[in-house]
Image 1 (cartoon, rainbow, N blue to C red):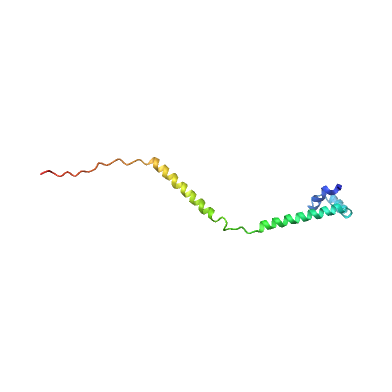
Image 2: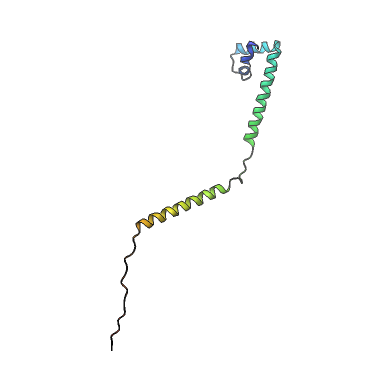
Length: 108
């Protein structure tokens, strides 16, 4: 393994100082092993970039989850009705019984 192999990715990403960049560039002219590694790193980088571009440019399927907001709203409404029913059941008192009016007819 070459001493420069640890600097190749940093060189590709332009993360080295200018003097180190020049040293790696000069080394690549003489070292076939490092040139092969750089070629492989570039292939991986291009594949990753293509994957990221594909993921970010894919149009989302808007119809896939159209039912989720409707179902969520129905669930919230059901919970509100159930809660209101429980609260009203506990707080509403029964109305007192009213006396039944009996009609009395005078006897003859």
